[in-house]
Image: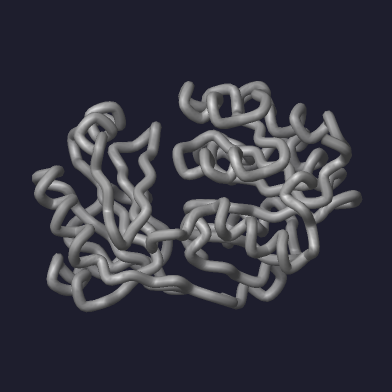
Length: 259
């Protein structure tokens, strides 16, 4: 592709490595890209969870997609622009059936999470309020998280294989025993398509970089999708090219190809 006009970046595993701040090389590469293209974040994080990353990266224009595309926010003001919610009843029932002992969290936009039971410390952003399963059923949400204590991501993925939901889209995590549901039709790709259309940018002129299951559709949709080096094989299969790992500043290398 020619130089991209829109650059869509995942955060965790792409810009940042674990709890570490973005490296100077990555920040410089993002700044350079921003001189020539629209740069936006597309993340599974919530509005509350994305704020520290925006502060560190220094983005202050355009929009940010959070909750796997279900929530759109103004990057500069942090004001929520749109939210797609769904009733969690059917999805919650199926997940409880397949994952005994799991705990759940429904996003309370701009505030934090409503949870069915205790989560590990530090794993959820914002205020955490325990409301039980019944409390979750009362509140439609843009994102439902399931955490399976004591299990591995591989065990979670094996148990989730073949699960489908009429009113939700499911993604997995390759580092945590974690399942995410968002409203059917919502994804980083669908959100990115909306933004590109508003900007008058063709998908052929979009570059996307990510490492997770929730990035796969976005990598396929973009004119050029780049998988981070540590991404699972199925993510690499959906990308047009691969770069080094997040620990090796792979995003910086990917962006330097065009900017």
